[in-house]
Amino acid sequence: MGQGAAFMGRTPPAWYDEAKFGVFIHWGLFSIPAFAPRVGKISDIFKTDYRRAVALSPYTEWYENAIKSPDTPSAAFHRQTYGGAPYDDFRAPFLAGLRQWDPDAWAEAIAGSGARYVVLVTKHHDGFCLWPSKVANPHRQGWTTERDIVGELAAAVRRAGLRFGVYYSGGVDWSFNPEPLRTLMDFVGSVPGGGYPAYADAQARELIERYEPSVLWNDISWPGTQRELFSLFDHYYAAVPEGVVNDRWKTPTLAAKLLRFKPARQVFDRQIEKKAARSGGADGVVPPPVPHSDFRTPEYVRFDSVQDRKWEATRGMSHSFGFNRNDAEADYESAEHLLGELIDCVSKGGNLLLNIGPRGEDAQVPEPQLRRLRAMGAWLRANGEAIYGAQPWRQADGVAADGSAVRFTRRGGDLCVIPLSSPEGAAIEIEGVDFAGPARRLADGAPVEVQRTGQGVRLVYRAPLDGAFAPAVVVQGAG
Image (cartoon, rainbow, N blue to C red; front, top):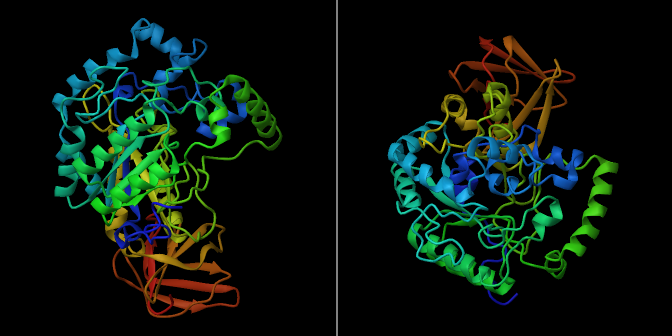
């Protein structure tokens, strides 16, 4: 492989594996219109309306592309609300909203959720940078903030005792390639060429040098060669020895370069559309393997078994990462559902990177999102021993006698048992498992008796269960 041999096969640093829970932040010019159609999960629209699926994305952060197709709800909203004004006009109200921004309040809310690290979107697909980059954009003059949003949030997050990471959209930048994107192959084939690879490399190095991020989270793909990418990784690991990089760094193949041409995209689109129609398509997004990464990043989906490699599931609280003005309370997943996803990830060796999408006009995190952060924090303060630093047990999944799901984690020699339900009463029976030992409920330390049965194990609680969600139990010596 040449450059990069020193880091190939490296084990992710302990802090990242032990952290288990991080918070993603999608916030930018797209947070001013804050609009996307309510079409369900991103994978759903590829099954039902493939020919314009990218333009119909439920992600508000894709708004600039969506309004380029006049037959989309986003374009209709834009015409009605903004009179068809250029996307660049959102810069002024976004910068005005910064007057109300309090990065320490954000950091406090995130720390209160029990998250151990933060990843901020520093540049999304619209190319707008949330730091005063010295790498000039040749297509949009001054396409940055003058205020150092990245630096201020990094300082606030670190004051709160958390790790700080950066997201960068390396594979897509609409300021370099403004072509309207409608199909999956349009999107995959839109990676800019020309001077863009050098621009992206220079900005990534600038982020590393200025902020020393603990996480370098690239999106979509990487425009440069594998050799150039490994040089960037060498630079990053030298600057941040305990840093981690994700798996969305696929460099251009011959097929990807061919997709820059519309006839090639049409051929591939026909094949993918037919396959989706026959199979119903896959849920979520799982990036393809790359020569080097520290962790994998399934999106709006989780792996269903323990993985050989470290992974991190990522998702928004609703179907969008950026704030969507259309979201009502029912569009957000419940706190119990999100906690269940975190617990499920940890039982299978993964982390959860849960997104918040602040508003653009006032730089505030919406209350429905804050409520879910508070609920996550309350549960983790009581049950975090079953999560932080935990490893998979010999099996991740279990089933209680009433049919509800159970998850298992391991802390050293101890077993943690976590029902994914809100049980009441004095006992839970778990089928198809065998373990024994002194046990206690984590929330209050009350003793729990472990009784073996012919079909599994019964947990008998000295203090009856009160319907609280996911009451974790630790069994000494059973791990």
